[in-house]
Amino acid sequence: MNVSPIFHGSFVIERRYPVPPARVFAAWTDPALKSRWFVGPAGWQQIERTLDVRPGGSEILHGRFAERALETKFTARYHHVVPDARLVYIYDMHLNGAHHSASLATVEFIADGAGTLQRFHEQVAFLDGTTADQGVPSREHGTAAHLDRLTQLFQ
Image (cartoon, rainbow, N blue to C red; front, side, top):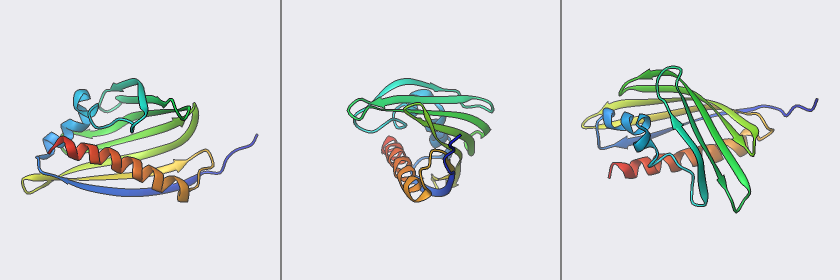
């Protein structure tokens, strides 16, 4: 059996929003709000989306890039949910059906004056031979793009 080496990495992204933590938390947990910012980039077409944010709840975001013949599937399980304060979830990323990575994500929503400091911390294991030098910058870039769209939600 040929097994790919595992490469690990982590990153933290902070964003400040001009709204209270309850509004930022809602943007992560309300399906209608999350579908406005947690989407693929241009050229990506959604196949399936579910969201159930509670301990033991799950999330799926499945789609494809038709031009690149690439299908992506994000599947998450929520482990720790503190309303308006914290989310902890694990998620798997599959590319064309192959298990690409497994991650632990922690999102904190911290009152910051009249607004919110959001801290996103991801610890990732790349399972398909993708090195940390290749995978972490790409994952961080993709996460930052999502969070940029979230920022637009509050403008």
